[in-house]
Figure (cartoon, rainbow, N blue to C red):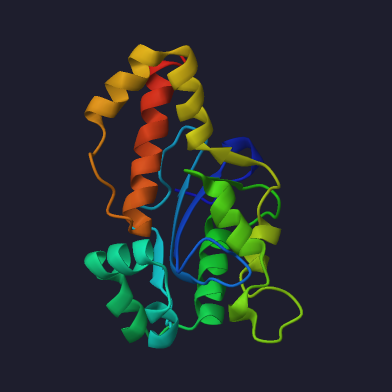
Length: 200
């Protein structure tokens, strides 16, 4: 598939796993990207996925939920062992996005509750280490200011099409792995379900 332009309606699906919920003090420890056109067709099946090198002391100070979940999924140990710095990962992610969506302000950020990921990507958080701007901020500067948040569609579906919402709940995986790439694939599948069930 060729790189996408405005007429293709590109969606840049991003999911991050973090050490907590505060973008000013917590860190991104995993990030994944998949890109689709407006019809939700993937431009690349593999996508872009990195675990960010993180000091054990930082990981030991995570809240209980993160300690349990990231420990169970294996992400905590992978973050300790990762060779990739935040700046290196941010550069690779931006290069991947530009490869498929070269024109600035064309790709729309997409995901589930993706406003939270956007807050971390915009923040100057602890990974910036004296930089004038956040280490991840160039990613957001390349994307359009709008977002497609699947959780918005989910909430509206429960209110307006409750039978459809119940059907999706029966079909959906019962538990998330809370790993970035798996979560993105789940979000794309969920939006496809709503498109085929509601947006006819």
